[in-house]
Length: 283
Picture 1 (tube, rainbow, N blue to C red):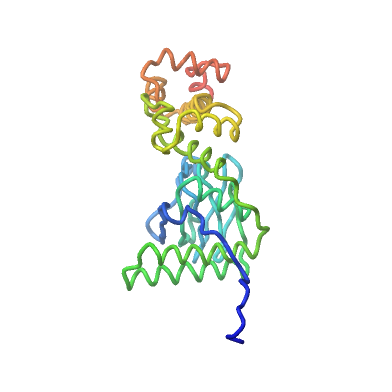
Picture 2: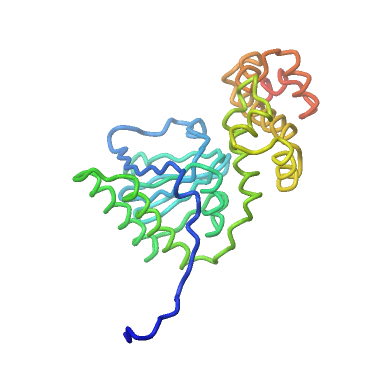
C-alpha cells in the first residue's frame, strides 16, 4: 500500500443502537433422556418474547406454528422464531435433538432481523450457511465453558451470524427511527398488557417521549391508537387463553388486565361477537 496517498473508505456503516441496550442470550439444550413430548404435542405451545435463532447439533425434532403440521428437523438445520409468535417445537422421541441458539430482545432487534428478511418464522435446511452458523455458535458455547465469556463476546458472535445472513439474503434498509418508537411501544404494551393500571402516559414516560408525539407516531405506523391496540391485544390474548380451556372467565379477565369480569365480558363480546363463556365451551 502506498502510505503517501490517502486511501478512500471502502465501507461505512452506522452501528445500530440496538447493540447497546439489548439482552443477548446464548444457550445449549440437550433433551436426551430428559424430556419427551406429550402424546398431544399441541399442548407444548409457547409464546416467544425474543428473536431467536436455533441450530440443531444432533438428533431430530419438530417445529411448527399454530396448529399446522410441524416440520421435521435434522442435524445442521436452523430455525428462526420472531417475538410474539405462538409455536411448538419438541424433540423426536426416538432420537431427541440437541440444539443451541442465540437470541435478542427488543423491537430494534426485530427491525434488524427484518432487514435480513426474517419477520416471522423460518427454517433453513442444512447448507454451507447453516454449517457456518453452527460453527460460530458451538465455538461460542465452547468458549463459554472454558472462559468468562461476556457481553462483547456474545455481541461478536451475533455480528458474525448477522454478517453471514446479510450476505446470503437480500439487504433491506433499516426503518426510520419513528417506526422503531412505534415497535418499542407495541412491545411495551404487549409486555405489560396484564397490568390493570397501565396508561399511555406510563408508556410515554418509559420511552422518554412526550405523550402527544408517541400517540402521533404510533397511529402513523400501526394504523390505530395505542389504546385501541392495547384493547385488541388484550382481547386476542383472552381468546387464546379461553381456547386453551385452562382458565375461567374471571381468571382470564385478570390475566388480561381487567379487574371487573363484567366489563371484560362486554369488551370481549364487542370485539369477537361472542361471549367469553361460549368461547371457553367451544374450542
